[in-house]
Image 1 (cartoon, protein in one colour):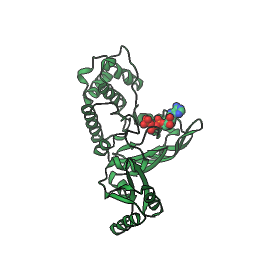
Image 2 (cartoon, protein in one colour):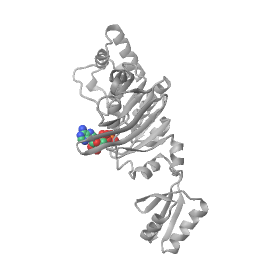
Image 3 (cartoon, protein in one colour):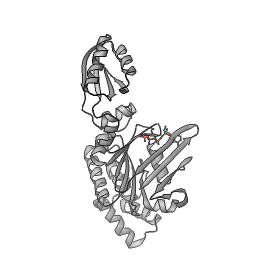
Image 4 (tube, protein in one colour):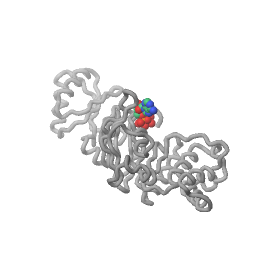
Amino acid sequence: MLQIRNLTKKYGKFTALDNLNLTIDQGQIFGFVGPNGAGKTTTMKIVAGLLRPDSGQVYLDGIEQKEHIKEFKERIGYMPDFFGVYDNLKAKEYMEFYASIYGIEGEQSRKLSLELMDLVGLSDKADSYVDSLSRGMKQRLCLARSLIHNPEFLILDEPASGLDPRARYDMKEIIKELNKRGKTILISSHILPELAQMCTNIGIIENGKMMVTGTVEEIMTTRGTASPLVMRFVNGQEKAIEILKENELVDNITIRDNSVSILFKGNEEEEAMLLTDMIKNGAYVNYFSREESDLESLFIQITGHTEQDTGEA
Ligand SMILES: Nc1ncnc2c1ncn2[C@@H]1O[C@H](COP(=O)(O)OP(=O)(O)OP(=O)(O)O)[C@@H](O)[C@H]1O
């Protein structure tokens, strides 16, 4: 079990992580979702032991990271969100180089490197130069590299970023296979439906704080977002919004294009009363409906961002 407790990280005066808490149980694939700059990479780097927090603790099975950094690094594999340049290095040499960092040499290193390249579907590229591989292949190689010391916990920072649909699918299948083989996985992404298909649990981060964590179903239930209430107005939207703001059952008002979306905690009767109240006060409502909720709308409800807003998917 990985536990992150009250993690705070500042870059100068800017607070990137603000008392962040998170627990990931063994065997989970935990999807870490948030807009650009929310603090995902910072969190992942801290857990991987590559960045020091200003305060807070990270525990793996109750063992505190600061006191046992070597053991942490042995038990955790980290795949960064960028891939460096490796001139004149073949894929197998790249793998063997990383194996040597962990003291794995000779025949053992060659065998392990080929096994891992096979696992990520790159066995036919062992003799290709790293720089000649496609982006998807490089990312799979990077994943294979993070497995070289057989870590039980994997941290994957946007492993499918920039890949085409086929390559994304392949990456997802590899991650599911790794989970089946016993790896606990923390994965970040902006692609929410993809995370939903693959993850057991989701955490949504915004401005360095965990907004919500749980299974997808739990999140939707506890946030009351199972069905956001969406409405449109021909006239009187401002008045309607005033009414919405005063209603105790209304949470999180999102205004997008020509529609207003809210989290409404009331029952059907209270929903009808809300509509009546808006109409009585001069709002011309031409649409008022509970919408099917998915992860995308959940994300927007919680963070106020669309995937497009967050930049690269
Ligand atoms: N080395 C640094 N120096 C100063 N500010 C930084 C540094 N690294 C990150 N930040 C800032 O900290 C915040 C969190 O960054 P981080 O990379 O953790 O976010 P993220 O959620 O991973 O974003 P993205 O989805 O874009 O990768 C951002 O505002 C970023 O600009």
